[in-house]
Length: 394
Image (cartoon, rainbow, N blue to C red; front, side, top):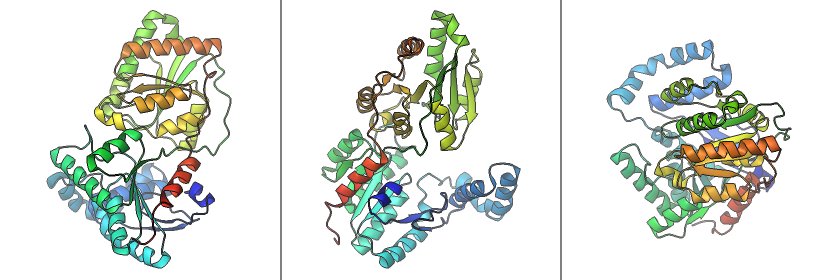
């Protein structure tokens, strides 16, 4: 948002109540209608206001209690609740149309996340004839994407709606762009790496006698630390002294089964810290030696790049990527002086841990790292360049 504003763009933002309200732009928020989506929004709103302690737990029960029977029917009996936030659409379409008629924007830009954002933007674009650019933060279609056959079919249909209505469809990887371009026989698909930003100074790296890894982000399903723990066990058997001066800090949410496996690991070298604010996590990352990047070991990883990659690239620390079938991500890491290995190979991960430890002891761990040019400013410039190719008023 700030990068667009620095380029002279005056955004008008329409969102749900999950995020905080921006005071420096025209920002309106629309409520969802389903009990499950309302509960989701209520949790975000309360956590911003009162934190996540006992008051948060009391208020979320007290405020939501009248809707709980309907929530139970929706999620447990009808089982129709998903992550697309469809019930956000009615009020957001009305809100968006009012704002479009009031502010007369040159372009509409939708991004998600939830597919409902793109459907809302498509409806507003169609009714107002304002050009639309739709950014899919993750592909909607591909192997291992979709919870079941019905979900997969629905996502294929939604992607078709987006391509039929958008003037440009922006993907965050070249692989996702190329796949969609072939699928729709269209030249609408564009790749723009989203980049990242740091609003804090870089700090001196870890200077103690502990070789510190850090992982930032969620862990779920096949994105877990199983192979990394197996690799650590192999490394400790080969170099027993390592288990006394190696540590992995983990910041973020994780599924309970993954937490249990980590807590059962025979070596006490993994510390779980839970979810912390982004700024705190980045400070901890700058004080570490190696930033651990982990992909899911299924085919969705072949066309996606974890967003934390762009944070990592700006931090000036060595990245070890556990990558699955993604030569594009491997190339990005290698071109910036970082290391990637197959996510499913404990042996390869073990060899990388030992090699990185040797570089750490020699003081050469960051010697070949190159400054990243993949920034939000670059992404904003590319977005504006794409917008300038579109003719206002379809």
